[in-house]
Image (cartoon, rainbow over all chains, first blue to last red; front, side):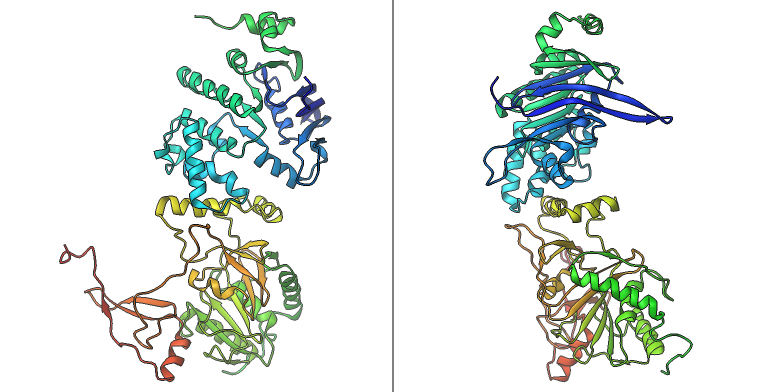
Length: 268
Length: 298
């Protein structure tokens, strides 16, 4: 692939201090992510998947290694360059998180503002970027609600009145409204029933395809990885034990843990 | 009233007043920015203007003429008590007339008469942080001010329009000071917001319980937030003041009998009096409004 790298991770690690001793939640993770590519991170619970995601999204600082992101050039500058997240100011990181990135939380309630309507949730990022026309906001919000298959008539309802699947779709719309290039998803389908999961996955696959989104999806569901991701990382005890193309990893697992993981999937 | 010599001039000791003045200098240098200050216990309950009183005490001089207003009136409990407090501890001259005053402490109104460069307006502020209802964390709101991230305030206004059809805030309507800091104008009616814009007087704001003060220096642009297609508007009344016939002032609505008759009068008592002295006369009677809830109407 000769496209420029979007996200470059080198030896990234994060340690939490536990009883005076540093415990590595994840360490020595390296990979490159290209524009439009979807990467799945799988592993058992406690294997450091979510910590890794938080490192990538600059919610935690790396204790080892680095994360570089291809920051979109501001007006004037010609080419964009890979920048170390650790070297960027907080203002810049917050700006990135609001515009160029999305973060879909596992629990929609963590990612939504529950005390304002669904429409305000979708419009929040636009208003943060300076949109000051109510009619335009309304139009854009309605369009996005339709796009994620939400009934636009419910635009003024509070998210608490939405079902779990609808909340998750609202959260996705809220994140995608600024056309980010990279979306982080932390187990986007857990806690939803199987039919809703399937619809949500369909929707995600379609959106990722239409918008040429790059995404890092943390999941413990191998089916999600198979459906969405081109490549995957398998983590165990904070270390990447195997990585490669999704079909290769799932059809021909090399590492004993991956073999165990693949063979433990239930098939009805 | 004779001056009480047991207290220092204006109650607070000189070092405390000096510290507050230093904080005020910073506030004037950064318009709209909330400066923390060492708020003192005052012989008032919180909520009765302890922040405003401390600012007034630290800027008042022997030649000042003090006016204190509460909801526009000079003769309500809060105004009378604060005026007596300063008369007793400083011996300065007090007045009810806006034009004669050099220092005006106010609760919830800006006088109708235009202010001048010689005047200082001191506001009593209960809650100085305009974002507090939206973002409970103080640490986070400080960060939002620092990075000028004010999208959240518009989310609140959006929500008003979506649910109620218009921006429903009638008082404490958020303003942008000098196009930099989002600021609470204190609970003045939004009717008074346009008066803050490019005002020749120095405007000082004190919140005693929250230990913050801020300022709008003379001739500073102050913009009320709005949407392009839902512009900021002030209240208008269909009636004139019953006493002085004014149509341009902020009116209080009083129910005067069991039939629901309303008397509309100027909230600014000094303004109303001045107009009456100049010969303006209102209808002198209450109006009966159509009451949609009464049975006769049905």
